[in-house]
Image (cartoon, rainbow, N blue to C red; front, top):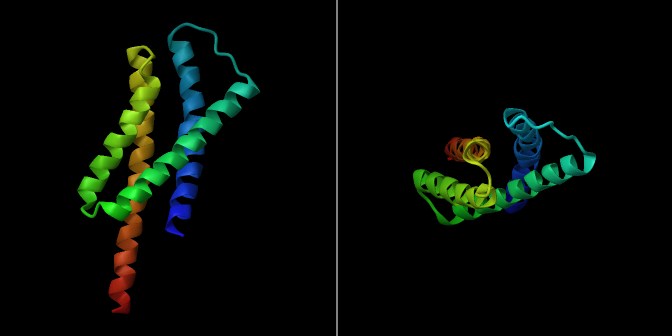
Amino acid sequence: MELRTWLIRGSLLGLVVLGIGGRLLMRVIAHMEGRTPVFTPEGTITVMFAGTVAGAGSGLIYYLLRRFVRPPWMRTVSFIVICELITWRGVSGLLLRPQLMFMTLSLVFLVIIDAMGRRRSIVRQESLAATA
């Protein structure tokens, strides 16, 4: 049950932050480089799909870390390092500035996922204390 929850959360947040945000960031980068931004429905769908899949993958990674890594600080550091390394592998062929911009977008996404996980842990602990 919890795996499905993290896959859905990661997918939905990935669609919004990585998919839509990534597409907007691509437009900003095109303007910065002096190129004419090109909008195609196929390109937009591809980027949004990739963001959704990446979000689902990060949801899976977060679920596994929640299950096997107990200290919250270690889970957070591991989650960010693993996912940022995967992101870096994906954007390593870009110029430095766009590479850093996409890494930052990914970091924003990862911080939101981690904050959702920490909030869920706090709510769970409070409900357990109330029933005890």
